Length: 439
Image 1: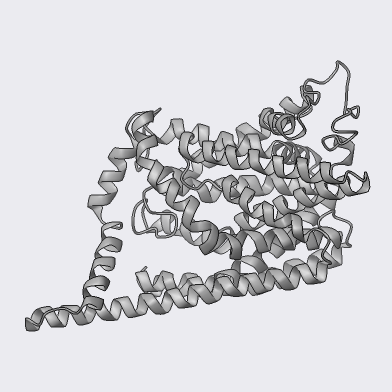
Image 2 (image 1 turned 180 degrees about the vertical axis):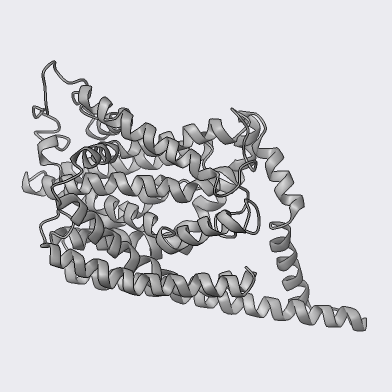
């Protein structure tokens, strides 16, 4: 692929410059993201709690346990980490070319378009779990951290994680107080004593939470999601608005941003390029999985022992990052060793192709699932059990692992990657490869 003169020599990254281990990792993580998101695509209120819908026994319970032990939070963590790495690589290349203000111009234009893509993805492609919008918002912060040393990036990330955990502790104490007030309100009702305002507020909150887990609400959501396109857009619009306004300050600053900073630190330390020895990555796996699985197992056990109670879930939020972040580090160690070993080249090639087309493939998940689950297509929302959703996941994996290498054989970029570059650089990068090109 020949370089092109964009913004004074600032061009999209050359294929020869790409870090293969990052593309493989991006492909694996993209597959893992769908493994978690499929529950939101196909079931009502069952992303966290399997007792709401989709089944909580047998294979369904096993699927929930496995996903929470190995994948919950870790795939989002690695997706965030890779986004931070990607933006750092972009800025680092600009810095080496003495791009000056043009670098910031392209960088922030790139984020603004990502923000727009996120809004379209959530509101028009009908995915209530959209995250591109939130990545764009957190990306604005990343720019100011690009020159900070790896050591301080890690310290800042730990500080941000700590704030999130503290906030979860405060929320847990509020939930305990709410349950206590509800219990007290029941006693007052039995005695014929008027309820206090705190009791009324607690009862109101609790009834709303119970309604969201009720069969009445599930039936309503099933009916809403199986309607036509416009009706589903209207139904999901307030949900997307809530996520886009509440999540950035409640979760993203303490979840997505610190993982982006960790990604920058690990890339600067050359951990993510596969340059460390096998022993180093083995230790990442040993300690990451050792700590993370222990915490995750504790959380899963606590939830099951509480009979999937509201407080059972709320309590485990306090240790959420203590489990998912170490497991994510263990995943990195495994993926880097997989990238280094001289076997399964065909699999790494396919996964890397999926990773190179991450934006296209991520949006494709929503397009496919829109037709599978909503009334736009087959209307299967709520009709499959939790473990049956995995059949859809595996089918999409196979499809994208076949399609992506074929596409990149003839084109330099995925279609959405090309559009994003076109809009970011305000110039047209090459799209179709020349006959005989192997770039």
